[in-house]
Length: 197
Image 1: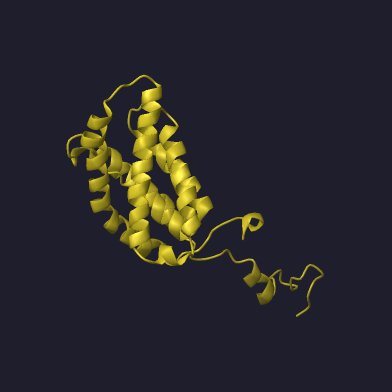
Image 2: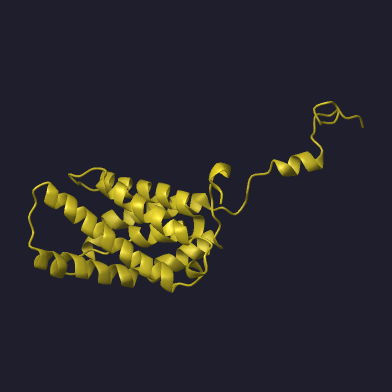
């Protein structure tokens, strides 16, 4: 069998060494990240408003963004967080389009720093990150609403919104984190070649 100058045989088939080097990286699981975000948005806007204490509603998007960032790195966390926030805002009537997208982008980028570290291997660090992420999103969203003229007494915000939201998010986070780990597998930092450490 003769080989042509381009590295292919006369039949037009590349040698085995050439074919294997072009194979895409398997096991990254970006499709699972997108699926988790879409399902999370549907649950967040359709089911979780009925699971509330006072005015607090669990934030399922926080643990989803955290698990995606911890298992796939800063880039996936930031992009996934932005997409998750934007989809929540588009699926539910809000007057501040883009605020949740920005807040979840920051959460995803910040939590992505724990990818492939020892802290991300246990369940306690992502659980703590999920609660901190929900706290950050609640405070950030409230700060924007206050700048736009809404007024709520701080004691009412903490007692009726913030504390119940954090408790419900903490209770909901472990199963979400376990499902995310099951779907995505081991931590693997997904970055373009120019950004790799």
